[in-house]
Image 1 (cartoon, rainbow, N blue to C red):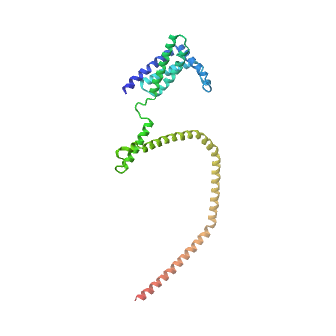
Image 2 (cartoon, rainbow, N blue to C red):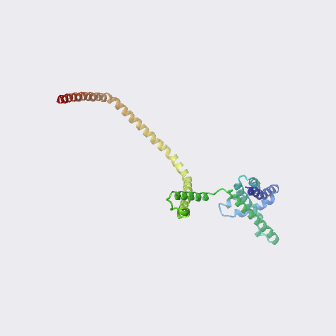
Image 3 (cartoon, rainbow, N blue to C red):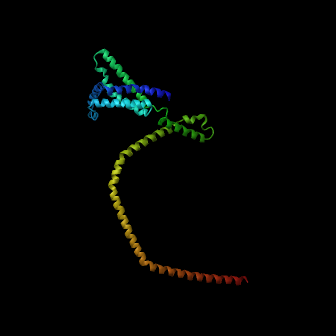
Length: 276
């Protein structure tokens, strides 16, 4: 959009100039950052103990972030990430460099207050730029739209007059569907969090039990091989006996079939004589 192409370079210009100035003359930026770091170091643990002590290095890093983030924002590349990084880079220099509450001179205090409010305004603009989706719908909007589509499909499937006036789209059914979608999304996030937490534990248990399971599998395979050998030996031993029994049964079946055939032939002859 044309407005974003114009507004982003305008917003990033001040940060690029500040970053270049801080790299050329790092002492003022380092002094402002030092006051901020001293104040943050007094916070309770674990924040206070993790605050860096080298103010000049922090100032140079913040300047590099301002230059890099400003260029990214101006060119429209990763604008949301660049805006968030620029907003964070303002905090060290703003809190320590414009501490108007420590000034005694009224004019100096007014100037520092004005500069402090200006930085706060810049942070607000960067926050807006960081959450700007460029017109792309959010997940909440997509969920509500999906719920409306479902309700419209149900209304179209109902008999004529049941959904007259499109009242179903604004009924409690839509609210229930939207609530269900929201609950489902929250439940999905909870399950994903639990999976992340339990994943390492389950992997550790699996690693511990893997040798036991492998040993059990090997024992069962060995037992199966032993039983297969026994069955094969038994089959070899009883093979002739079973074959002989099968031959005897086959011979008996043939004799019985011949007997039945003779009986059937006799009955047929008797029936023919009667018919004559």
